Image (cartoon, rainbow, N blue to C red):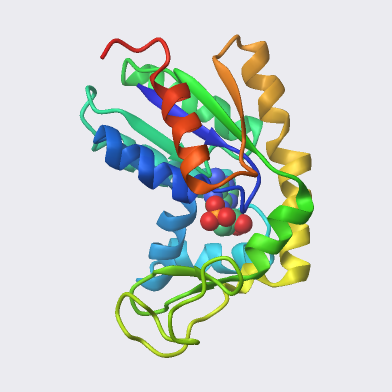
Length: 220
Ligand code: AMP
């Protein structure tokens, strides 16, 4: 099975992708995480990606597609794969279709998570991350037990991702609407199984809807 989690930044693709992958023992391919890891390890790719990411722009397709292909080829054909943050435009969707075809696979489901822009803006601008262990908090919806201290590793000094600042968040949403949202039509036209899921609900409610949609029509 190959499932694409599609939806705007902040809608919960990351959270839901982890829950689904853990429940089914599937692998995730998360291009934002792969790019952030490349930046942390100071690779050439990481250096090239930095300016685009901090500005809320898409990193050039060829860089991202190469990362995805490398990761995809390392996953056994019988293991389910969840894409989060990829594809982000039609060119990437076409590159993905080709890579999957070479591996004898295809996109089986597109799960479209949706929420209004004001909800997304609030979620993203309030997000804080632990620079030491990567745990994610929210100043209002999921604050740490002690102000500014990571619950998981005890590190003091949670940070806001550069691209979670209000102006950049607004730009990321515009980029989503103009470049990524057209993929809904693209996959509907390709007669893929596109399932719309209301992401403006509790994590548990969305988790159940995502799981049901991913498993629908799949033999247990
Ligand atoms: P995310 O964590 O998915 O919100 O991604 C953070 C940033 O990484 C995006 O704003 C882009 O700059 C970059 N990025 C992630 N995935 C892609 C992709 N598929 N294509 C281009 N840029 C990407």
